[in-house]
Amino acid sequence: MIEEKQKQQAKAPLRVLVACEFSGVVRDAFNARGHDAMSCDLLPGMGVGQHYQGDVRDVLDYPWDLMIAHPPCTHLSVSGARHFKEKRLDGRQQSAVSFFMLLAKADIPMIAIENPVCVMSTLWRKPDQIIHPWEHGHGEQKQTCLWLKNLPLLNPSNVVEGREQRVHKMGPSEDRWKERSKTFPGIAEAMADQWTDTDLLL
Image 1 (cartoon, one colour):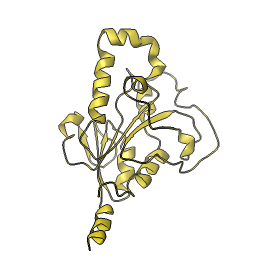
Image 2: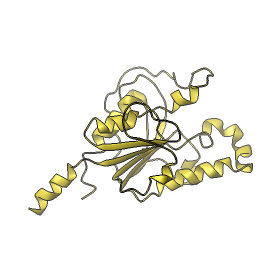
Image 3: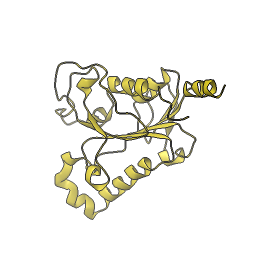
């Protein structure tokens, strides 16, 4: 009886917070699989799914089962290393690191934090894995680091040819940062498939 109850609990919809996401790509992937997912960002949300426009700290203490977070990388990414000295002097990098760690230390059973190669590898710890879009159905190369808590490594779901760097080569525009920050749908679907079939909550 107890074992059967545990199996039912494991299959119950998860309460998922997608922090720092306005596009709804990750949120919608989880909702499409029957989970209760909400995105949160300072920007208005896209699509029709649940979205809280505001500071993620307002909703962080809700009893979530899983959080996937995309903290801003502007002051952390090594691609902007030439500006690090200035950003440390005025406190922008320290503030970004503190926000990253706030999410990492949240009292949520399962957590994944996504960022490009950044200073957190030395200031905190190395990521659990680095993934690329071409491992999940998109013929592009973009190093994405994942720091995981109580989650398995993300297995390649659809390895395809092509190693383009479309995102990296985007020309200057008002929306460039928005396009660069969006999660590839194939990666979002892999997360929703692989990070919900788990007994870690038992």
